[in-house]
Image 1 (cartoon, rainbow, N blue to C red):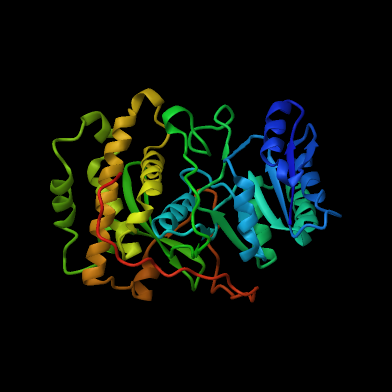
Image 2: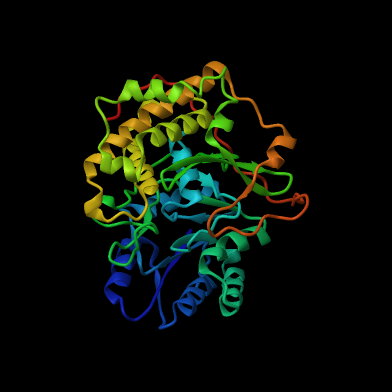
Length: 393
């Protein structure tokens, strides 16, 4: 049984009413206060006495996908986890969710050290009062709302999972580009229903930001992300193929020279590099049955790489073209790994790489990380079987 609350201020009664209507099957409580932090804390305290197993709190600047209550009903397989129904666009968590979507999973374990805005969060009801106290103390001390959920999950040894389809997004009128739902053709699609399998966070996370591809590697011994140049990382796949693979992929997917204006923002070669790196993380091409949802996800990945370019400076046709490039490059990378395998970084070489972290991440840990006992892990999904590369729908 799930209880719910909508938290917000007095300035947006229509938005709160719309959210309550979307959640009408849960009979949500509406918590209104001029101070957003106070509203959020009171919303979590409203779980007391409901008799529910899980408590959902949604901020009034959120939009929820249709049938969201039906999706929440399927969370019984994740009884001891903090569940985030949204992800910040362009974040490392967004990159992890994109990889999980390619694997055909419905949930992904949150990236260590990355922030996670509490736009729509589901917690075990037994922990809702504790989270309210934690949030009240942290916010009163000047803490960031985006750090609350990751920090609380670490303290209570909770599995922190993100819904891959993202059934909650920020309202376009209130969202800034790059932090939730966009506007117009850039709006982040929520995608359709996804399986309930959980993907672990990727210990190798390719990143495409500011027109450049890099690879983040998780150093578990020091609980630190490390940044590897694309060429150095990809040289560990096969026999000296990275020097020729991008050019071969470019010839296979390009019908002509790319627009110069687009190249200044997001070079085609970097999209190819990113797709190849993603494919080698997967190791297997995405299943053909996942193609309809992945078509939207590919567009999101492209727009996340573009960054804060004005709407008129990035035609939607460019997104479609580069989404197709990305899809094909992922397939090539997956087949290269399947054929040649991937060598691991020796520990001494890994430790020589510079430390990296999400933009809002915690400082790198000092010394070896201590393993903490926790609840029984959720079921991890194996990679789907190797499927032939299929044209993008």
